[in-house]
Image 1 (cartoon, protein in one colour):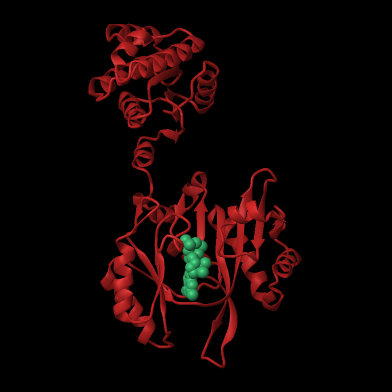
Image 2: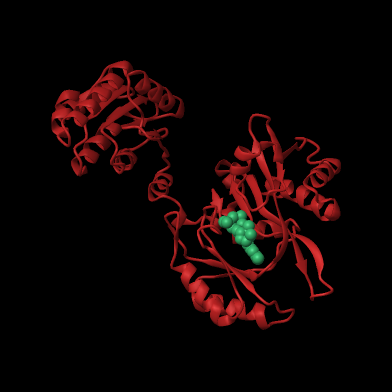
Length: 405
Ligand code: GDP
Ligand code: MN
């Protein structure tokens, strides 16, 4: 689960990391009030920065990060940003903070290195630039240090990172931040804690200004599988930024992952779902999704799964593969029949149900004129053939449904 910059910064602050103060505003008037406090309040600043809060990178380039020097300008800029859509996501909130006087930008992140089974600290002196870009253009510029799974990130490792980044002049702060990123990751079960830019900024009055190292941007993704250990994090979920299909899938306890192919798959059990996808590929098709309806699915969940699959216009045929254990075949059959009666689009479907109450399921499906298959290979072949037929006949899916039988 991705969380907004403002929320990520809160998690960093909780671990004692240096984050400049900020406020979140949902309207131009709120942004104006926040800017006013910063521009005229105690320890006032000359400019504020206003930043779109959307769960995508590159907000700066898209015009979602702007400076303002007066209340009027802040309101005006916030109005413009709140009216923007960045990479398809409407901006509903902005972050308002004192504008930093940036001397130099760095990149520093803690990520989960699954292959090494360790937390990896990645740094680059080319801050502000997206790391994927650095990895492509100048991979040698990325410094990598693995934290020990038991001992964590050692001081000497953090110092090495700091020196190699050229942050020797800010050694103490850099070490604290490097260790703090790993701490933030562990404390929150995050799989990414990314600061880009980590910036050396000038602070204080002209003349007596001092340099300080601060986290100017923050990106954190939380491990979905560990969310149950952090009930507070549920409040950080941003329903706006999640595809409606994902919200719907979670509501019904369905594991649903979108893929690029044309064969929709409905399966119970993750392993069987993977196998089904393999067999679709072997039969010459491409799966449109991974979908696991889980154990003991009732008719309504089956119907919900069908809606999820059909919501994707690319789907040309559906393969249902159920191995009945706790899940009862007749329940699934009822769900499929109900789903098809409400289906707006006629998509050919091939059903294979074995196990608990399979005979009852077969009878129900036959009465409802469903195409069925006895083996998984046969089911995959039929679904792929039906998809081909649907494509050949344009939108004439009825002919393809016939072909599936
Ligand atoms: P991103 O583009 O979504 O990663 O958003 P960032 O928060 O990283 O901002 C993008 C860029 O805007 C940064 O790399 C900075 O160069 C610039 N920027 C962000 N905050 C400030 C600020 O307070 N002052 C100044 N002068 N520039 C800023
Ligand atoms: Mn950034």
